[in-house]
Length: 84
Image (cartoon, rainbow, N blue to C red; front, side):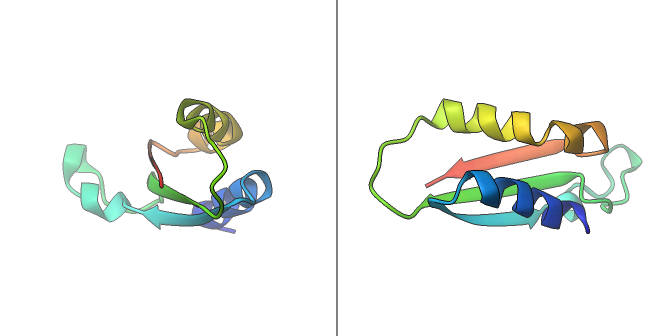
């Protein structure tokens, strides 16, 4: 299972009231500090609410960072989170 799949599985279980999109942006950083652009190190997560319930964006960011702690330890370098 690759990093995108693991992240999808982890977040889908926690955020079932959101549509979830996970994008690997690692290739956009190719050449920066001799980076090859591979390895799923730069990930963008887009969460889109399915309903009109209220949300706390800061809390969602904290939860996601906490849930993905092991991914950061195993090579995830950058995480961009967009909440719609």
